[in-house]
Every structure is written in C-alpha cells, then in structure tokens.
Length: 289
Image (cartoon, rainbow, N blue to C red; front, side, top):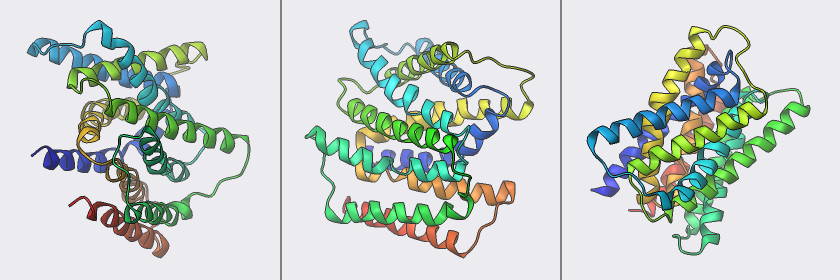
C-alpha cells in the first residue's frame, strides 16, 4: 500500500512541479525572487503547522530542530531558492535542462552515503537517456545570449541540484518522517530565504500585479502544501533513481504548458525528446517491479 501511495505522490510531483517553472517566472515579475520564495514557504509551513496544531498532532521535539533547520536550509533555502534566483537571468527552458542534472546528483550522493540502494546498469543508462531527451525537448527554446547572467544562473542551478540532493539524502536518514516535520522544514527554509532577502536589500519596488499574486498563491497551495508534502512521502518509499525521474517529467509538462498557454512552438525534435523521456522513465522503473 505504501508503495502505491508513493507512486501516486510521484505522479503528483510530475504534474504539479512541472507547472511551477512558469508560476515562478510570473511571480517574480513584480516580487523580488528571494522575498517571493521566502513568503511562499513561510506561509505554507505556517498553514500546515496551524492545521496540525488544531488536529492535535505531536510536534517535533526541540532536540530535532537542528536537523529540521538543516533540511529546510538544503531543500528549500538553497534547493528552491537558487532555482528562483536563476530564473531572473536564465530562460525557463534552459533552467529546466540545468536542473535536470538532479537525478545524477541524487544517485551519486545517495551512493556515496553507503546505505542506499545502488542503481543498476539499466537505471544508470536510463538516466542518461532521459537527460538526452530533456535536451532535445527544450533546445528549440533554450537560445540565449551568453553573458554573466547565464553563468551566474548556471552556478545557481547546480548549487540548487547539489543542495537538494544532499538535503534529500539527509532527510531519508532522519529519525522521524512525519508531516509536522515537513511543515517545520518549510517554515525554517522560508525564514532563511527571508533573511537572505533582507541581507540583499530586496523589497517590493511597486505594485504587486494580480498575475504575480495569483502565481504566488498557486505556488503556496499546489507547489508547496501539496507537492512538497508528496515529495517528502515519496522520498521515504521509492528508490532514489526512480524518484528523481520527476525532474524529467517536469520538463515535459513545462514545455507542453508553454505550448498550450503561451503559444510556444512544439516541433518534431521536441516531440522526439518527450518520447525519449518517457522511454527513459520506463527503463529506470522496470527493475523496481
């Protein structure tokens, strides 16, 4: 039953987090990036904490707070915050390619940790096939002028990949895995983002548009409350090689949304890339039974 629920949670990740690239882009149109991300996670975490308090769920003990702060800093403060920062200067399609390195980071770090399930040859080949599909999928929309903006965005995305992977490996080995724990991860990660925003002098310079406000609400409800909770559940019940494939599926969803909602082109090579990604997911999942 837990495996079935984990796959259901994984499907939610594929569908919802594939939409957040566009939502982040819209949200930071009139809200500074780290400030937006901080508000997103603090509000989401606070709502969950209030819900669990009303329901009477036990909260993590104070001795666990250091672990929760570390997880929040890695998964949300750096893992999400750096992606949001990168989207200021890197097109969303190219950002998707750069973030698609997450499966390699996750599998590598999990293997170095020593007590995770090592991927087999088929899964490793599948990861490379999937990454190739992602490149094919987004390459028509990934053209940009090389410059300092690209390189700072590139560094930010790889920092995000490394932090997200470290945080995921650390979270898998934590003592407890309750939803109140996840709520505090959101809260602490969001607070760190707000501190970073204050240190950088971020503030709203004008009127927040309805588009940005709507995108922020969407990120809070669907991207954080629902999808992040699903990620933390799936993280405990699925092999890392399989779980990490959500990144590839996210890219397919993101490109399809761009085509349907923004009128971005969808050509033969993009269709081929989408098909390759689906084949790769099948390759990696086959050995899991």
